[in-house]
Amino acid sequence: MTTQDNPIQEFETERETRIAGYAGLEDWQAQSMDWLKSAFDQKYMYNFAWGGRPIIQLPTDMAAFQELVWKTKPDLIIETGIAHGGSLVMSASLLAMIDYCDAVENGGVVDPKTAKRRVLGIDIDIRAHNRAAMEAHPMAAKIDMFEGSSIEEDMIRRVHDYASGFERVLVCLDSNHTHDHVLAELNAYASLATKDSYCLVFDTVIEDLPKNTFPDRLWAPGNNAKTAVHEFLKSHPEFAIDQEINNKLLISAAPDGWLKRIA
Image (cartoon, rainbow, N blue to C red; front, top):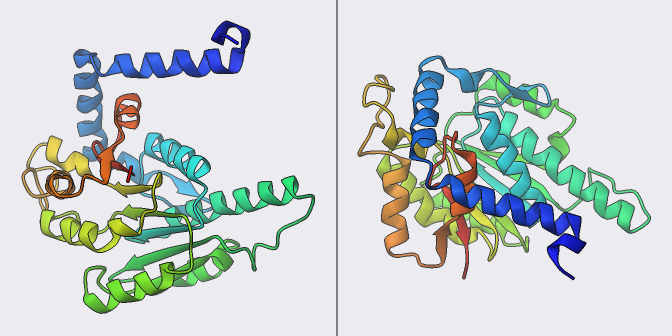
């Protein structure tokens, strides 16, 4: 059967070809980066919510993330960096959707309180009002939160122990964005991402933004998540940048941060 006989496959093939072609559109890439610079200046990514909780992400990254969750169907999503909790709620709701679809296929109904799939969030400071809002959220039954530094040995051990009972794990790193911190998180948690799943590293775009974009932060061009990713990949051939995601998003806070575990 050719793609012309299969309209679904034909659509997929056309999309793949179109996305691959974006890699050579330098003018469009430059325009996208100009837009991103203004978006950070205007705090555009602070304007959105998921399930009623603020989520500090670009809509394009949110769309790509839900594609990956549906594709990989993880049992566990680990996230460093909680903030207001919107990202945890998004992950939990996506896993709940997968639970529901599984139940429909099996002819039954899943109880979200007993479903195995879970989300684990780690943050050095979970503020009381955010914790209270998260614990009162309808998705709370699928979410656990650990407070403490993500790179301390006790926390790393605790997270690894927690993850040991899960078969398919997806990791998201989105806390302190300095080179040393992100590299430490990669060394601590990337190995938990299972084969064909992902370790996602957010805010790699800092490397491409003007050096005064974050005057009150420690990270800047030359010292950020992207420099950590490139350093990590030098000694970890089991991971590779998913160039298809890189190519198709154009507007993303995580260029080169979509790391697929290939071995």
